Amino acid sequence: MDRRRTPANDRIAASELRGAVPSAEYTDGWTMCVGDPVVDLRQSARGNRDRQLQLGAVVQVFEDHQGWSFVRAHADGYVGYVPVDALKPYAQPTHRVGSFATHAYLEPDMKSPDVMSLRFGAQLSVLDERKTFFETNIGFVPKRHLRPLGRPFSDPATIAQLHFGVPYLWGGNTTLGIDCSGLVQAALTACDIPCPGDSDMQCAELIGTDIARADIARGDLVFWDGHVAMAVDDQTLIHANAHHMAVAYEPINAAIKRISAQGDGSPTRIMRL
Image 1 (cartoon, rainbow, N blue to C red):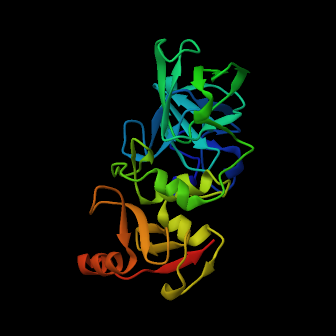
Image 2 (cartoon, rainbow, N blue to C red; image 1 turned 45 degrees about the vertical axis):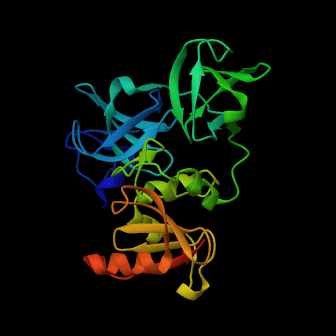
């Protein structure tokens, strides 16, 4: 079993694992959601970051222990640890942040105190509508920065391009910092295409057709061992990468040559979703 998506630790396991994973206790858990703008999903309490979760992300909590919640993210099945106080009772989200970033304000006025900074993809509940602001469960947010969850984006490459220049961050999932698979996950999720969190899972689990290098078009994915990029046209990729330490454009042939020269081999798969 892949530890990244196996809801079990030394003390407890999900009820679904009864008979498959030995545990002193099994539980169905309970539903909560992320209440902080962004929180690291860690391999262990105070351990390294696996991925990140944003405001409104739904999680199943299996255990609260010494200030840490052991959770599974509803969106992609990743399990890990977040601080107990980073979670709040579940509230059905209605909208997502559809701009690069925004702020929630105390009042429907741009000059009122801001109460929270949000990034693309954060989810929240709209309660009421004013002239230029939505009243939400966390404050007043400019209308033009929110998008109904029932109205997904249609072009993943456009969402990837929205992230141009975002600094590279291993395990990052926001416009504050993002890695290669986080960029692809953000782009596909915004278009209502379910997407795992890491490039090896994306390569194995996304439903697509293998294509040749000569046939690459906008939105196609190029995988290497441990890396993924998205085509914006037949000659150019966009990807979060450690070479540029940012989300950057790169000619496809140049990227293939550079990555091979640094010892990471040739593309392992080119996929059209």
